[in-house]
Length: 123
Image 1 (cartoon, helix red, strand yellow):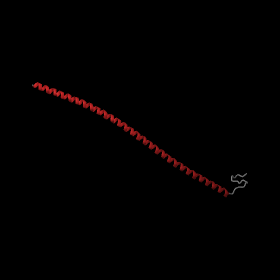
Image 2: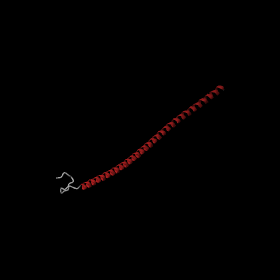
Image 3: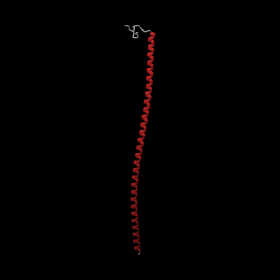
Image 4: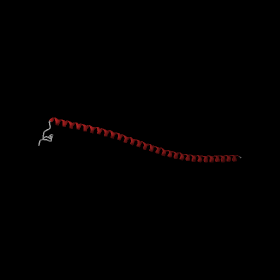
């Protein structure tokens, strides 16, 4: 048995040119496989980047929608509180008005009483 791995089945050795052709063909196959693998890698990376951008865009859209919803809710709560404050202020103003009207009526009655007393004192 020969120590060459390029032996023909009949036991003869293949010529060096045949061996070189086989080596070159194998190298070309390796280059094609490498190019194909590189192209596949590029396609996968491009697709992954596209998917990542889509995911990011969806997350941003969802976050924006959540923020808008929270803002609407906060504005509604503020409006409810504002109305409560105005209602309390109106009630307080009504109380002050009632008290003031009562005090004015009491002051008129007192002044009338004092005026009548002054007239009675002079008569």
